Image (cartoon, rainbow, N blue to C red):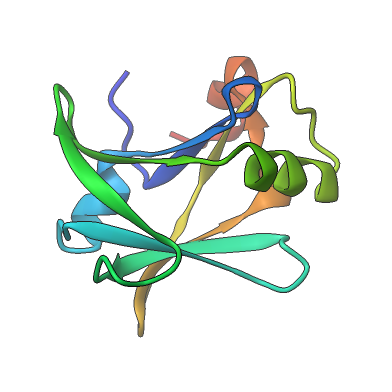
Length: 123
């Protein structure tokens, strides 16, 4: 499936957040992306950054274009628990592109289970 919208996939059982290529492309195909969050952890955002930032993650080139992985057992578990989501399911969250600053933001409560994604994605 080719995704039209910038999104992330939270693979909770594997403690990974997968950043899709549309997000990376919108951010200008940087070498690193940074993860930002609200104090309540109900929203997160991704932006381009340098590798020195404490929450920076390397962008890699894969078979399907540029991508990034955020691998953190504690972070993924906490974000799921704080937002009432199961840590035994996979979710997709469609992001909102913002231009000043150039980031892609995600509302965790808008997460859709992967098998239900087509119903809630408006693609």
